[in-house]
Image 1 (cartoon, rainbow, N blue to C red):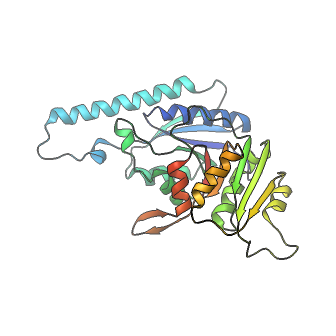
Image 2 (image 1 turned 45 degrees about the vertical axis):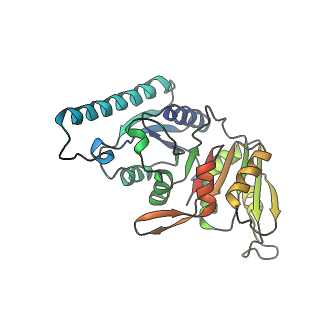
Image 3 (image 1 turned 135 degrees about the horizontal axis):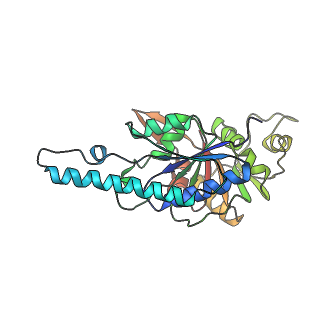
Amino acid sequence: MSDELKQLLVHADATPQFAQRLEFACRLAARHGAGVTALYASPSASEALPVTSGMGPGLAVKRENLQDTELARARSVFEQLRPEGLPAAWAEIHEFPLVSAFAEQALYADLLVLGQHGPGEGWSTLMPADFVETVIALSGRPALVLPYTSVKPDLPGNVVVAWKPTRGAARAVTAALPILRQANSVQVLSWGVDAWTADGGLDIISWLKAHGVRAAWHRTGTEPEKLGDLLLSRAFDLQADLLVMGCYGRARAYEWVLGGASRTVLKSMTLPVLMAH
């Protein structure tokens, strides 16, 4: 089936959150009979801090040694956590710009496992703050983003879908189908009237049912101004361990500008979020 999960791609770096992402991805892959590739991507010394005329050779060597140490640390985490019997591979990006190189590799994955941007130490934390949304936008692949603060997220059991009659939401729900089929409960949240739903026509609930997913639909009035905050609040109330939504935004002068709801969720998320553009 075209909506099966067969290949997961995990962003690897030297932060403690890599272990969280890898462990989660391996559990998800084992549930769905998929393979996992950990792709190491961290800013080079020259990208993170360009060499200046006053920089001595000793500092340059120290920077390179730090990078080597961080790479070795991440590789060690991968070797320690990779489960026996699970198809798992290690890969590294040495091409720059880093984000577009990662997005190119993302084309060959069914689902990306990325992490919310957070504080920390080392070159790895100098990744662009918009790494997640830019990779999603450039690759067109869905991504399951883990919150920075979560220690060990549960595999999705109670799922909330933020539904809008848009391409991004439809792509996100389609990508989430393998997960939705195995969920204990699926709750669909929507606001406003679906402008393109004819009397007796198709809707998200009937589409999900046709794909083997039974869901409850919570429809309310006009879409609120602070939709991102409300989505996170409702997901908490419904005890969700996964939020599925479209990643909305637009290209502007070589940068990806997020819509309000996507920006709020990526900044304030407290549960895993599966996003697609």
